[in-house]
Image (cartoon, rainbow, N blue to C red; front, top):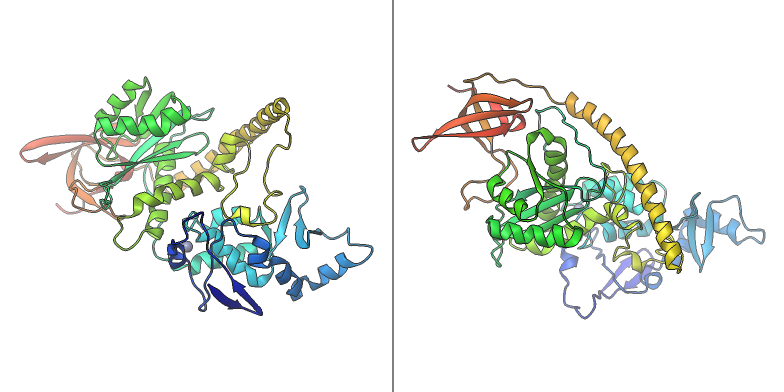
Length: 462
Ligand SMILES: [Zn+2]
């Protein structure tokens, strides 16, 4: 496939192991001014991107090269040349590839629209790029790129809840408490998948998801066994939100089998609804950005979404979940195609296993200390922000309310973002600060249930 950019003719092959027929990735990339961008894995990056030549052609870099090429060199500049490639030398020793202007779009596309990048958000993309590359005005370019991305545009939403003050919870180590929730029903895939079980470790924010056909205890049990127990061993506690679509009795039975305490409470609103909901939102946004028109291919994309969530920066933890579990930086498929990929990783450089072990423990200890500090700070500021935007709303006994259902009771209805208010329900009593019991007459019988206040609103009609 050939295309022309500036003065350079590119001849790029798309290769992915033996599978050369997948040209699908192309159709997902935003294409500007008739130019076709490429995804490259396993190709020689210097040749493909021609970074060296572009750097030398860039008028903005001319002055830097002149000084560096001088006999005396330019020790006062934060730049260095290795194997003909110009790097920005960060104060911490990291080498960032200097990206000349004409290549910026290619880098943005490679890391944002790559099929494994699932159109990650601005903050994730920026955090990822600034660890690998250098160019002036990177944040602005990333911001503009995301705003202009046709796939991201219009799909992503950021709906937040309005009610229920923050109730904090203490977590002290990885996979101590796992929060879980169900997403769906989604459009049934050809394989019969309809739901997604989403789990997230409250300490590291490491996510796990499993495709489900039904919400039976049997299927949930094997899902939890597979994605949590077999991979991360038994957590002490499983949290589900009291008032989501989770069938709590089913989940109770599942937890009993593994001797895990099942906590089901809206009192943990921040971490359950908060953390899991943010992960939910990420999955929804990512999946809706990359699914095909008929929307039945979403199961194939779940793993890529998980990969991005695990390997990119998360503001809530001020870290990459992968780093918190493994003590080293992840290498993305795109990275291997860059000359600097050896340099940007935080990794322990030793072949001595004992030294490695000691250092790894040191790295993790440092990371956890930083995380605990950040969490406290984040929690405090989040609590202020969260509570500022919410009211502690009170309902009185007998008051008529509407209840929001994030899930369709009727399976034929497709899961969509948006509002689904049902009712009127009547307030029976107050369970705790953020939970009320409501009742409704249904088919000549009275149904009652506990509901978190963020799902309640006053019923205006009589
Ligand atoms: Zn996008």
